Length: 114
Image (cartoon, rainbow, N blue to C red):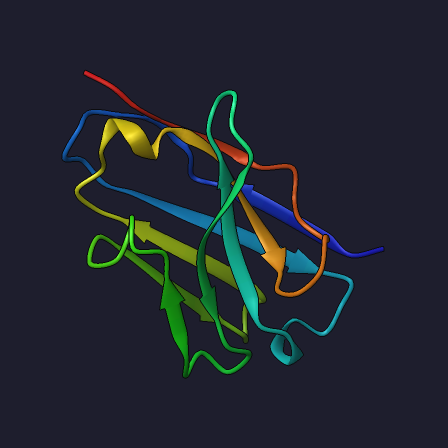
């Protein structure tokens, strides 16, 4: 069974930074594009970013472009999301997911508040 385990969330002040990680196992991580999605309180899932299987192509939602950076280390089977200049509206549970599927982890909470 595929495993995706997110970590790195927490409470941060506006303007701060966090780096999320997603440890992948039980599938060939390097063969799949991966994404980050998020769900804010009382709202639906929102796509945040996607990276190609070899890391060569990245895409971002307009709401995070220029502030967030997605990356991956295929040797470590790990996906990352560097989040800078965080805003209160970035508060959400963040999930890593296999792109184009409904497979995602359990999520990590990010709260941006003073």
